[in-house]
Image (cartoon, rainbow, N blue to C red; front, side, top):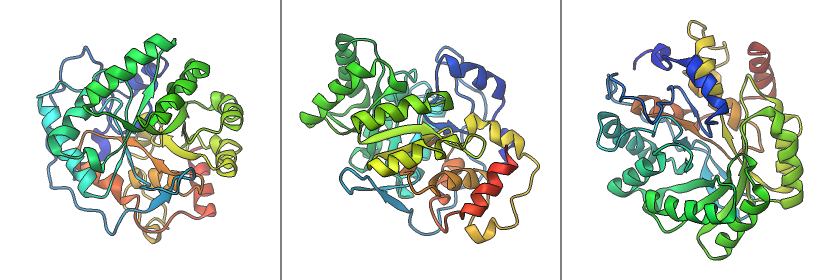
Length: 327
């Protein structure tokens, strides 16, 4: 497996782009702008990805009891590639690794350039749709725009329904959430949710969650941004709201901090063999978390991510040590 030194070539660009295109997933790779030329980096891993050891852990969605694997996948950046390109061909192996490794939860958005088109094509060509717990979002400013966007999302995803429809970053949520619930009543989505990606919106999200009681929330949570554990995650657990975690890698910045740093001495007892696994296992070790959704376009990174969903969870002392390490 190649070094994680190749995870980001433009971390500063990814950080600057957050205000314009907030990530709903977390990735080692730098998102590729829709107008940029296709990357020239190799599109195949140097070695075949090793399978995860043992089955993935699952967690129950409180609203129904349905079990989903704790390691999911996102599409921001990594799935914004030209259809038919070399990167698209590599994604075929990446998504195969995900589903054959026991994954099911895939998160996307109409705001992620052509990611819905790419994911829809991959699910269709690979025959993975029935195995996929498919989540997308509403990200528009009025009812008419939402209706048009929803119809377009179904077309782009090549499906007639999704498992989870979320209001993206609370955008016009007073209109979007009732519309999502209408679609749920019509059987076009099984669950509805609310998302955000920064700590300063946690209080507002918690207030709306308590008032509206959605099936899901999606929030940022990582070793370098653990604030969600103070109130928002306990509130979700109290209310029976499922939780998806984005930005578990802090948009890749965490890898720069550990480039030459060894894992903690206790990593082996937790079954952790890479920093990516450590960051993901930190997220799923909180009992309120249903799944974490890191984005990657590389099969060997996908295989590594899945390994975080096996073995022991981190103790509270181990989680506290990580937070202190990255404070």
